Image (cartoon, rainbow, N blue to C red):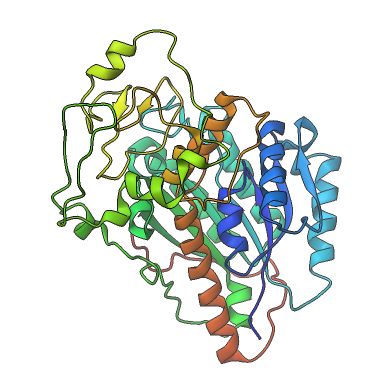
Length: 396
């Protein structure tokens, strides 16, 4: 019988990462997101998608700040939830989360682990070490791994997790590898507790990172993608036969029927500067801001903060929320609430993990667990704190 892991989600945002796990056979049992508008959007989308309520509920607002989960009475609530989940010894427990990343982002604040957001990575790792889930997922920006000073901090987090008994594997992924129409690098760190691995009979650890990669980056970035075209409102340009059409923004706009999507009219109206919008060529994304997408190319990283403006390929406006959701590879049925502010809509989209990437990560983990469990023929037991971890094969 296939395992259905129980997921405790942190920094949940509006649920892009969680949705990928849920559709892959996981049970989301606990959801934590401090920012109430994001949690409201999370709940709204779950109702729209007809998904069940998490067994241990939604936890938002300042009272559920993740810092309080390691040092106050709120920690007891989480501890009790995890203990209750473990009363069934066949349950497999996973923690998933992507701590806020501006302090590690190359284009962000770059304050590192000393920044308010940077500190949350340490808190999340501490939370993992306190509660010892069978596995965890840690997602963050490339800068945490690539930038020398941030990488030292990243390595210290890994040492702490290894000391707690976790076997680690990490990879710098790109969303486009999994079919999302977006060039978006992210570091993914996955850990399995050594006790859990021994219980399911895994002694030679090789994680299947490559299994769900559809478009290897070495191949996808070698196609003759369109560069720039003179901008013309509602112009018609046929798709070249030499590129994978399914990785283009126009393909996803059509796939998600963005013009008729409930969020189709949610976009910022220019107060001035229409002539500036029209002067930027289709496909010119060389600027820090005012990047115009090309219909027959993938999007640059969906990051709509810090005054970064992404323009529609052939309309004199910014892209809509419906179009941004498509670029994040979400299904057409995913909708943000009408009463959410435009700023919060674009912020939660830019913060989210592309749905197809989250789904691939989730499928890789559950395949790994199910294959081992079937071979072993037993049920995993809760981990203890004995033993030390190490790095498995890293594919960065």
